[in-house]
Length: 266
Image (cartoon, rainbow, N blue to C red; front, side, top):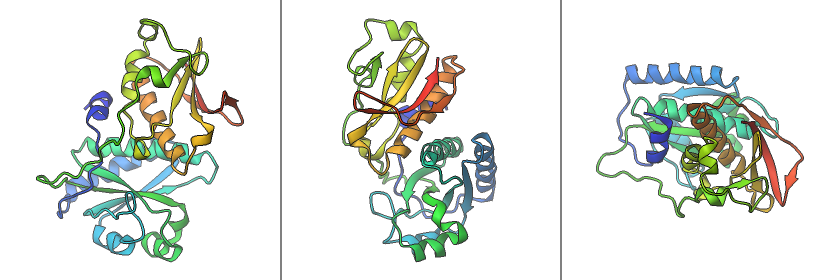
């Protein structure tokens, strides 16, 4: 499945079959997760927890998706390897890459937030790495007949609402974005998931580079995660469009009340 098709259909499954995935699929997942770690400079170490019941019983009532623990046959433990303040961006980038790889095996997944769980609970669940685990992934086969899928509470913003020319508020005219090869990239990038569908990303496109920005007074606990996911999909979509750029993080810069998060060479 192409990244465009994946984004059009991407949903978080919150109701899984009570059935193991099987040794063959689990081995393929493990192999894929090692590849994701390697490809993303080991920003996240992934550990497959085959005994999902143990993890669920420890975290039930303490962690979950929007406060509700998700029960699944297996979990992927996502250990953040860097405590740098920007590590949340790259961690989310890597985790979304893992989700994409898992989906290629027709396995469903769902983010589970665990950072709010008490320290003693996290120690029992994750051992010595407990303080570096903020998210885990519930994985398994979706329960056919009752697919409890995440539905956006708000519609996706249009390209004109998230992409600006040179400065916030200035829109592109006519087919200018299409002529630059960016129209389709932004069309699909805007479909990326975010916490409560907040869509905190905005883009300022200049002559030979673009800037990913977010409104300073709307930053919340999961903004870095949302922006890291957006960076992942923009990068993959831009590759399909023939762009060779890489994300470079930006610190200490604001534009018209927006924090500059990263820049990308076009």
